[in-house]
Length: 307
Ligand code: CP
Image 1: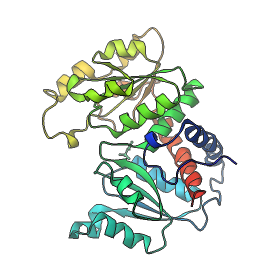
Image 2 (image 1 turned 30 degrees about the vertical axis):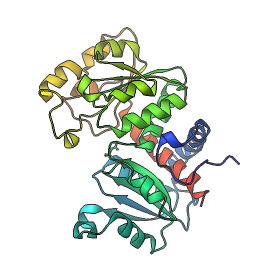
Image 3 (image 1 turned 180 degrees about the horizontal axis):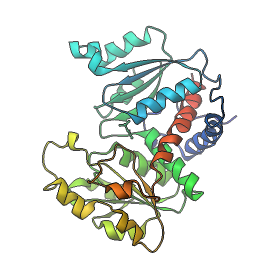
Image 4 (image 1 turned 180 degrees about the vertical axis):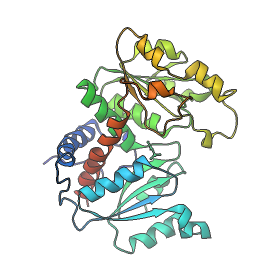
């Protein structure tokens, strides 16, 4: 049986194309399971998973919890706002106290880039990064690529544009690593202030012209403007951002070929996407969410095999 190459999923940068293909093949099986009337398998019976969320989340937290329940794992959920972190406890002390209660795997979202790497060298449990600051969000990139593969048959050779706030996005970096490993052509597009200079060194194309980018791509993965991470102004106003970089249904319908529209959520309607674009038949946004459960089941299952 094929094995995953690492004990943790910290980022897409650290895994191989074979790992990604193994996750997809495993997720294909789990997608079939979660569409059955009885959606549960016993694969992770007697495994305990702690979901540690030090930053807000809707999709990722619910998706991991459902994935764990579908695999029959025992789960405990932790949110920083209602925990002793607010009394000054360190991350390592908090996690070690939770692990002392015999936890096998940790899913963690944290505002600090590198928080998962830090823990992975200090605790015995398997760690899955559910988003660490502006660094990586590996399961989001995996479910995005899985959804492209499902819609277009393959990722290799496809032209994928990542449009929006690249500077503050962990989804962008994980997507670039994942799509490149799978052989896609990747372009990032946004205002110059929201595209870090080092992206050109990652081997992606850089554009500031959203209309030309939509004509170029097969898939547009549109990212949210992350106002909560912006302590200075990167563009004059949200209205101006929408005017120059927002995508409308009319823009999609004027293209000479249909493209696939993606968004990791949460959407800021009227900013990066108009409401009619967000609800248009081009989008596969809820397919991404549905695929997230199967992909996270695959990741949990494969990492549990490395315990
Ligand atoms: N896509 C994503 O990470 O969404 P949440 O912040 O709701 O988990």
